[in-house]
Image 1: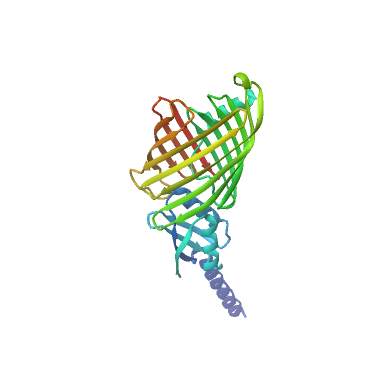
Image 2: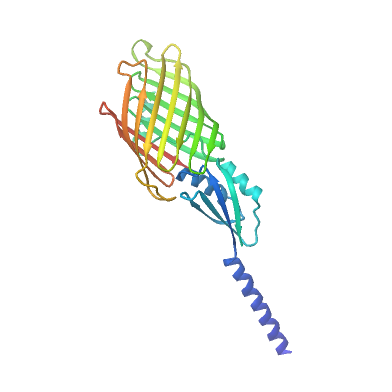
Length: 101
Length: 213
């Protein structure tokens, strides 16, 4: 009986480790090519609107490349329509969206 | 009224002021302060959408000894977003109360308003802007002014860096005897803060500040 309890405990422990690993490290990246991205105010507009979204873990803006990289939480979804909507609300336009798993 | 004047001056001197896009992102607030040899101006606005902002505008015209308090509405008529550049056409309008204590108009106040367009184009190295404005406080003061600004960035910074622009602003006020003013200025831009400092051809300072929230 003790072996059964030990086995169950080990399985649960391993399962919990796996969940924690996913929570901390596993998020998806979306690269968005944006038109009109020429200054810091532009970048701030995009950053502020995206950071209000629960699905967004973090965001990087590359002014030189005109590229916005969105890090999406592993348990969340943000589709292209939503991304385009947020970029448009910021005042800019989307040229292309590329997803990285 | 004098008390209000002191508040504006203190606010402008110690908090700074400015000159940037008149509309923010949807849900964004902006505070702008502008000071030159002609006027002090404070404009605080909220943008419900990226195409429109509404806010409070307070101005003091030095030569005319005129206060103007108004509600200002800015509309983005058209934006051209390109891969490496952006251009904008804005309509700016305001309506409120003008007050002066100068000469024969001593203590007089009346309804006043202004309207004007602004066009700008910029990429990460060059900036061009044209702006005009017609102001009318019928029996007190009417004016038309227009300006053109050209700027060049000596380097292209990344997001979050200190961005520097070297600019020259040429302003025309047809009703003035000396109707052309040339102001070389430096624009410094970091995070949510934008500063402009200039000195015009009459030796008068320009100081602008913008903060976005």
